[in-house]
Length: 225
Image 1 (tube, rainbow, N blue to C red):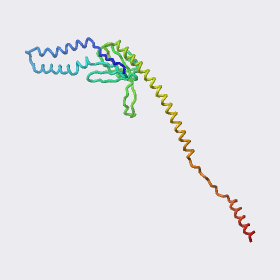
Image 2: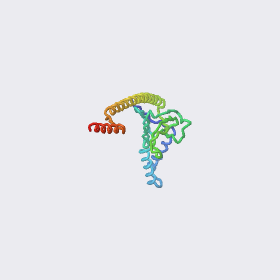
Image 3: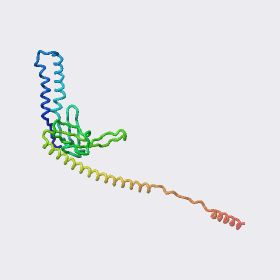
Image 4: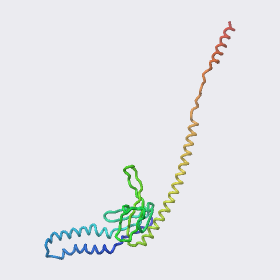
């Protein structure tokens, strides 16, 4: 098994500013004793604190991208657990390709410096009642951008090499299987022909033969008389 690499998402400075104001809105009510609607505002602060602890902070600080042996794992609490196999990746770029639509792209990160990954995903087609592969794009923002590019490039290249070798092996095995299958079918055909019963056809006597026998019998009887 190869080594795994985990990269956390980078954070934009505006996110830090927004978090500062958000936490101020939580903390301030607890330090002010005399104001109207104290109970309502206090419960409001408790609600913001619960959202902060359960959703907001884990979402921002626990979004990461893990380079596993055979796939890239994108985790974004609590919404996303995405596996992208290296063999399904067809492009790694800093921007969305011109032939792709913005609807195809989903963002998993919090900085402006995005890394767009295009990959094939299996989608069920209800009309044709089959599974087909479609192009999808995701934008991630690893904190250590350059290191991530080096690591995923190595994983991607090695995965493609392994896939090509596996494909060649499968082709060879398939050809050998076809040859064995053909030889077995040929042997069975030969055995069936050898064991096939021979049809014996007895031809009826011709009229001339019957007449000649009749006349021969009649002449022999006359000779005896």
